[in-house]
Amino acid sequence: MVRDDSPEATSARLETPCQEVYRALQRGMQTADHLHDVAAWKREADLHLHRHMTRRDAMEDLKQLNPEMEDDDDLGLPMSGLILHLPEDVIRIWHTADSKIPKPTTEAKLRFVNQLSERAIPLIGPGELDLGLPELLPKPHATNNVILQWTAEGSVITRFDLVRPVGVQGGQVAIDWRLSLLGRYTQLPDLQYRLRDGLEGIGEAQAP
Image 1 (tube, helix red, strand yellow):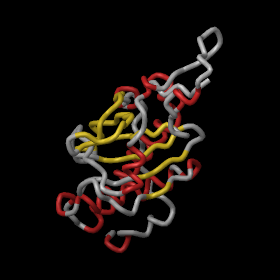
Image 2 (image 1 turned 120 degrees about the vertical axis):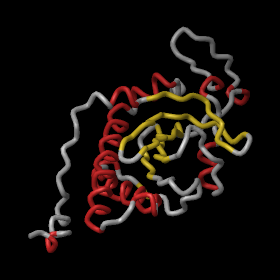
Image 3 (image 1 turned 180 degrees about the vertical axis):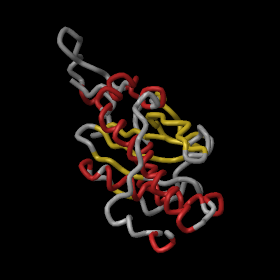
């Protein structure tokens, strides 16, 4: 049976990783805020740095998922990306300022967003008709490629969507489906911030 890439099936497969990513981003923003406060930097002066600090700290919390960091940030100043390779799915974690996802400009990212709509992928199971003509069936990706698209205002996550891309249209990523996950995770207990080991000494010289 062909893998089910519907929003319901995909979100069920990715429930635990998505929740871990949400908490890691929350903690990452807390760490970025702390470091900016210690240095007396204004976040607005360099949003790219704040997002980079966020994703760098998030990598520490996501080590068990073996995240990769994207070096070519080509989707706009606020964008910071991580990649998670899972058995059936690949997740790119991208920050955007609004709901539109700009067209990627690298070959790897264009390949990532170019995939069949899940509605075009036939599901053949027990009792279903198999025409026996596999050469006529569309060939899905080996993995289901999805984007965890998040937006933050200040240090508050205001968008956390699971998005399945299907190519590019009109200068932006075309969307197969979009599923908001924010409501699921805003009910989680507040994350209490604690300095990660190795950061305790930062700023101590300024203490009375």
